[in-house]
Image (cartoon, rainbow over all chains, first blue to last red; front, side, top):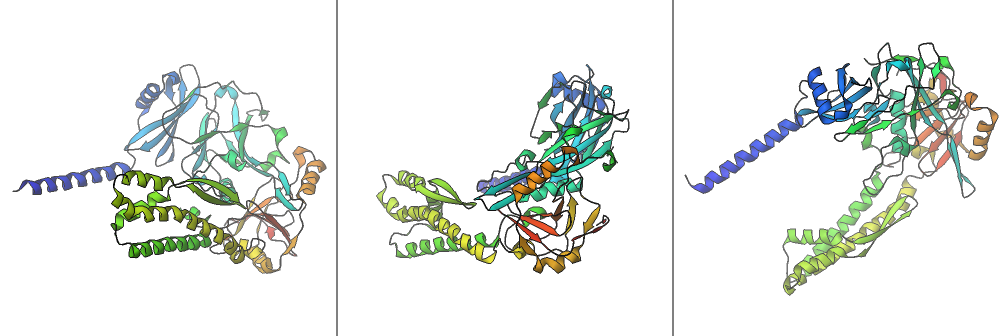
Amino acid sequence: MDRKKWKITTTVVIAIAVLFSAYWIISAKPGAFHDATQLIDKINDVFPQAQAKVIQDTIKLDDKHIVVPFISENDDYGLSYWVWKHYSWKLVYVSTRGLPELWKLGNDPSTYHIVWNLHPDSNVDSLHFYMERHRGYRVSRGIEHYYYPKIQLDEAVSLEGKTYGSMKLWDDWSATIRELTNNQIKKPISFEDKSLAFQNIIISFMYYDRTGEHSTLMKSYSGRSYYNGKIDTEFLFFTEKARLESIEDNYIQVHHSSR
Amino acid sequence: MNVTLNMGIGIVPIITNALAYAGIAYFAYKQYQKQALKPSVWKMIIVMLVGLFSFSFDWSMSNTMLRFAILPLGVWLIFLVCRGNKHRWQKYRSFAWLGFGANYLLLAATLLSIPLQNVLYPTDKLSTHIAKVNNASIIRLHPSAEEVSLNVESLKEQLSSMQEAQLKSDELYVKIVLESDQNNRQEQFPYLLIGTDSKWGSGLSTVIYVEMDGKGIITSTHDKQLYYRFEKSLLQEGISDG
C-alpha cells in the first residue's frame, strides 16, 4: 500500500478519535461524587489552612454544582464549592467563613443559590433575606422625571437545627433581577457587569436566634478563603431591622431550607 | 436562552447593518470588475477585513454608540506586508481602503437607524412598550404591597385609553420619605408588571411599575420614564397561583 494513503487514513482516524474523546469529556454526565475522606483530603490539599476535619453533608444544587459544608480543626464552620468540569469534580472555592454567600451557577438569575454554614454558637434559628434597591429620583433638564420605586423583597428560611443550608433564589427575586438587568443600557463592547451592585440591587440578611430575638451580634466570622478556579459568588450584607421599611414580623413567611 | 432572545436587539439595526454590508459587497464587486489585475477572492476578503481594523474614537449620542475610524491601521499593515512587491500592493490597495471605508458605511447605518427607530417605535407611545399582555403578571416589590394579583382583562381593556400624566419624581420622593419614618414607609409603586412584550422588533425591554391603587403605571426604559393614569384598577384581590 502506498505511504500517502496510510498517512491520510491514520490522520483521519486520529482526528476522529480526538474529536470524539473531546466530545466525550465535555458532554459526559457527572460521575460519582467523592466520599467524606476523599473530600477532606482534597480540601486540605487545595487549601491546607482550611484544616477540614468533619464533612457535614453534601448539598447538590444541580447536576454540576455541589456545596459541601465542613467543620475545621479549630471549630470553624466552612463551605467548599464543587463544580463538574472536564470529566471530574473540581473544588473551585473553599471558605472557612460560613456566612451566607450567593453562588451564581449560571448567567440566569434563576440559577443563583444562597448557601451558608453558621457556627452553632450563634444560635441561629432562622435566616432572613432581603433584596433591596433604594428609592430614588432624577430630574433632567428640569422636566424629565425619573423615579425609582423602593424595592424590598423579604424571605426567611428556618434552619431546622442544622448549621448549614442552601436556597435557590426565589422566583420573584430572579424575575425581578432579570427584568431590571434587561433594562440596562446595552454596552457596545461585549462587557457586561453581572454583579448585583451594578443594578443597584443589594441582597442582605439577618437572623433570629432561638429566643426569637433578632441578633445583631454574631460570633466573629474571621475565616479564610481560597479560590481554586472560576466561580461567581457574592457576599451578602448584614442588615438590621432599623434599616428596613414597613416590616412586620408576620409578613415574612418562613420557608424550609432545601435540605 | 429563551430569555435573551427577545431582548436588546431590535429589527431596525439588523436591517440597517444588512444594508451597510450589502453596500460594502457591492463596492467590492464593482472594484473587482474594474480592476485589470484581479486578486484572488478569498485574499481580497481577508484584506478587506484587515482594512476594517482602525484606531477610532467612540462617541455616544442619545444612548447610541457612534464609532469614528481615524487611523487606518489595517491599511498600513497590508502596506507593510506588501512592501517590496509593487504588483501586490497595486492589486490589494483599493480593497484595503474599502475595508477602512466600511467603518463609515457602518457608521452611516447606525446614524440611519436612529430616526428609523424613532419613527417605527416611538418611545412616547404606550403601544410601543406594551404590545402583548397575555402572559402578564405582577410581582409585589415592597412589604406595603397588598395581597393582590393582576387583572389581565382590565389591562387589555384599558391599554388604548390610558392617559399620560405628570409625575413629579422629586415631590413624590420627598413626600414618601418625610411622611413616615423608615419602619412604616409605604411605596407608591409597589408592584412590578412582568411578562408583557414590547412591540415586535423594537428591541425595547421596558420595566413597568404599577401604582398602589392599581390605576397608574410607570413605563421605564434606561433613559426615559412615562407615567399613565386610567379609570379602573389593574389589580384584583387574592394571589393567583399562575
